[in-house]
Length: 396
Image (spheres, rainbow, N blue to C red):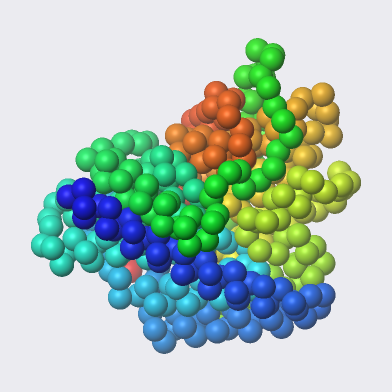
């Protein structure tokens, strides 16, 4: 079984490496189109992504994958992986406000499920292999084997973090091998991704600040969740082909990216730009407002991608706004607190969020991040944003 988990991790690392190389190539190619040209570029990419989904197959979204893991005995169907890969590459590389983490997790998770069925595994062994596949994809992108493993478990339920505890060791093994392979291919994930000011915990009130800033980020998390739900309920009444929706979404996203360029893309590089730049308070308010709007348009118009890194971007924007009013508090503490709380509020993953942020930012003091994560987790809305964390998705 160890060799099976290791092999799955190697496959996940190779898959993630090839996906990232393709994404980087497309992103750099399309990045040459600036100014008003981003509007037709994003509109065309949206149309192409919609046509891919329409003709090749709808790969679904994160809530469908969670549903299949929990209620379909871990069976993830890989037949729509080509559609997910092509559509997500178009959406992410052109500047959509969703990241590659969800598509990658779905592809590697379904690969684990397929491998388990080939070997005639059943029950918890099959589910564990699917979860291990998910963890390998997530780990490759974020460079945190422990955080990626816990995320694959936590994302499955809004309350029970280790409901499928049998999958912990398979996920850890697959994640470790995936991390090694991905870093060999890409040389990414070694060291922090985002640069924060130096921080040293010298004041016991830092815990209180972490909770206070976490409360602010949780409030923004509530706003984000209900904004998405209202937008979804409005657009659900409009019956249009998927390619028309993705085209219209691309037009709107293009206009937003034209006027506020930093809101383009999912935030992997833009977070550093945000943290090292000199933005006025009014500009930061505009950035956070339109980034949330852009994420909502990306999600509801049928564009494919994940919202974890975009949520981190929103948290970083909020931290800079708060820093204007609390300049004496270390910016690194403010930033990790806001990023942790909003992500834990929306995804219900406090443990993995704590570990991931520590790896991504180089912030080595777990406790303030944990306090903020738990604040967002316990004060999140009763109904989870990912609806299949609560119950099975009804067949439509």
